[in-house]
Length: 115
Image (cartoon, rainbow, N blue to C red):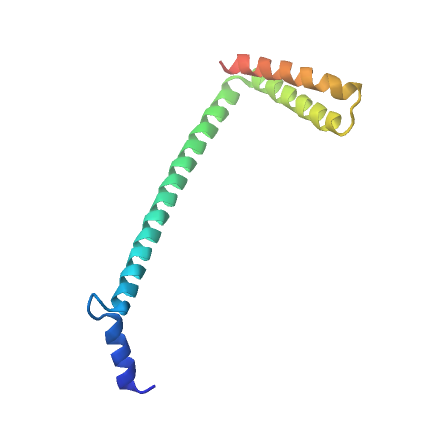
């Protein structure tokens, strides 16, 4: 392809509005704008989420420093509950049947402390 043909094809892409090259450019510009808008929306959502997670982490950290005994009991209860659930979920044994009420009771206790 010689230089003149290349220049002519470039002129066609940016030609008059009725030209298919202009439609392609318009479509590409519209796609680029939509991509930029989506990118900004995702960035904003990520920033808000990371800010809220940071705040929640700080609250949990402060609570655990202010109430170490409660935190220890809650953590112990959660650990026992998860252990019973995982251990009881593989076999339908007596321990498995007892695990569910224990987990519910521990959850109620933990909920009462956080209110």
